[in-house]
Length: 89
Image (cartoon, rainbow, N blue to C red; front, side):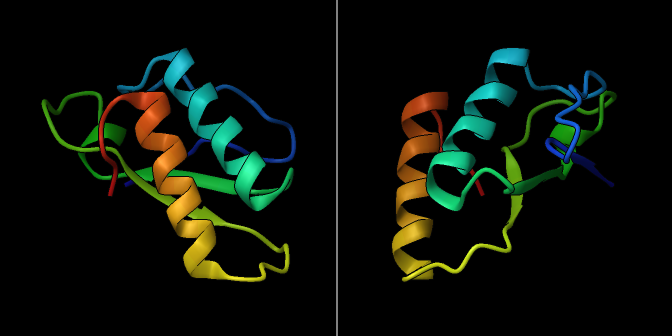
């Protein structure tokens, strides 16, 4: 099970265990590092309303040419940890 956090229409998804502020922080970090067209999916237990606990499992996609995927991953991970106050997978 996964839920898309962003798409071309930037619709807000409310059927998951992330707050609106958390979703916006994830979108902002992804757009800063991966570009405006970054796509984000939430999967795992946080995507399921009936589950408890669990980490924030995210999958990122972009069509942008990245000079260094390793650098982008480090920047994204750092930005998300600062914004959310917890690590992600």
